[in-house]
Image (cartoon, rainbow, N blue to C red):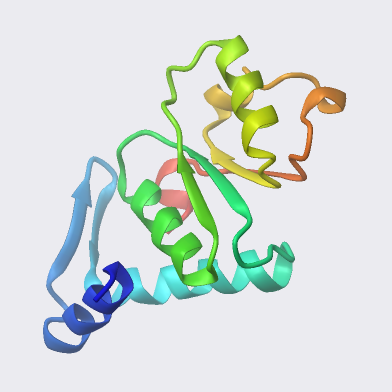
Length: 134
C-alpha cells in the first residue's frame, strides 16, 4: 500500500472527515482527493509534465503544500520538498542539481530565484498563494 492507496481507502470510508486544517481553512478527504486529481490532470495535460520528472515544492507548511505534493504523486512526478529559507546560492544549486522543469512556490520565495536566463531547466513557476489554490 502506498500513500495514494491510503488516501483512496480513506475517501471511501470517511469522505466528509477533515483531512487537513491550517490558518487558511480546512479540507475534507473528498475535496482533497478531487483537488489533487485536478492538479495531477493539470500537471500532465496542461503543463505537459512527464512521469518521473521532478517538481520543486517550496511552500510553507500548509494545506496547499500537501495538495501540491499529492497532486504531483498522482501525476507520477517526483517531488523535491524544499526549505523556503534557502539562501540564493542554495537555490541556484537546487535548480542545477534537480533539473526540475517546474517549481511551486510563494511570491516571496520567487523573488529569490535567479534571473530567467539562469533558471536552468525550469520552465514553469507556479505561485501558490494561500486559499486561492483551493
